Amino acid sequence: MTSNSEIIEGLNDLLTKNYDSEAGYKNALENTESLQLKAFFRTRADQRYEFGHEIKELIRSLGGTPEKGTSLAGDAHRVWIDFKTALSFEKEESILEECERGEEYCLSEYDEFLSEHTLPSNVRNVITDQRNKVANSIRRVEALEEVVDN
Image 1 (tube, helix red, strand yellow):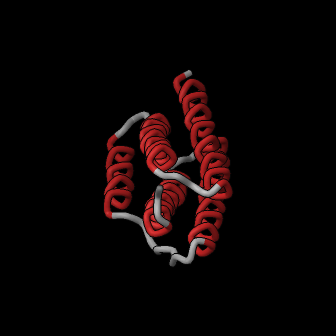
Image 2 (cartoon, one colour; image 1 turned 90 degrees about the vertical axis):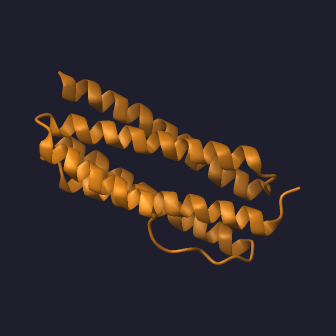
């Protein structure tokens, strides 16, 4: 059986991943000229903001305190995106590749959390819903890559 403190720790890890994702999408938004990609990145940044609020509520409902801020790894990834896109002739493609990579990592974090913890149903439902939306984002990024390639 998983303790509340273990669940809270895992939720705080997911919260940080969502802070990273939100910041990453905002960064991508600033690095593209494409109106279609700007709309996509804005929508995803807003989504991750909402995910963060949902996770904060779960943490509080379990008696925990939500953590604040992005991770060093996420900060480094955003710097890498800036560097890579500055050097790339295919800027949008590079941004989408990095978004896909970030989303795949995020998805693996959700999968790991869901597989490692015995969760109350309200926590499992929210986190599973968010996980599925991350998986849908990956498919959307892949579709956008096809459009950008053509």
